[in-house]
Image (cartoon, rainbow, N blue to C red):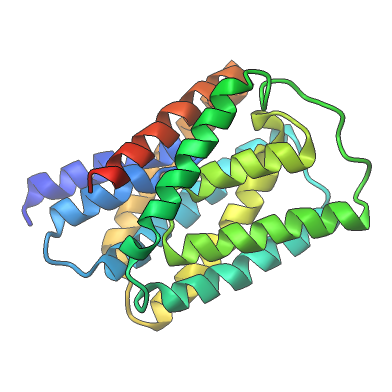
Length: 253
């Protein structure tokens, strides 16, 4: 690896932060760039190190979104805890289960998500009737979503924020910008849980990860500002591009 590879990696970390802060899917950008700069590195180390910029970038975007639209702690705490625990569980299995085993399923889900969003132009672009209060059923539903996608985040990672965005729009009956704070809360939890396990296993290159994090945070701040300014329609368009790009990359990987 030379200085050119490092610079390219940092640029892609910034781009990943931008994508992640808007609609998730930053791993689509960050992980391939990491593997290009470190061609001989085990994928689990690339995933583990990538959790450092992902966590800090997501946290910085969350601060901006939460200032615009706070979330209720009664809902945020169980969501964050479930995502943290299941993100850790997924990370524990990441080095044991080859990711190619899941590739056909992930491609099918991505194509399904793209078709669903494309065929329903109103989905996620206008706020609907929110599910009443923080009822027990609502807490259970959102927590279950956070747990399931948190498990995926620890195990595979790429596209976590995208899946969370679509699921939270449906569950909360709001638009993409309205659900962003809860998406970020869940994503922080899953990233943190996975990072703890990867760090314990020695799969994190801390110096490189922190350098990438600085660039990721910069991209995340720019992306969150654009999402808040340009609205849900802009987020929907970015989501469609990211989902189709992820499906294409996985299909030809």
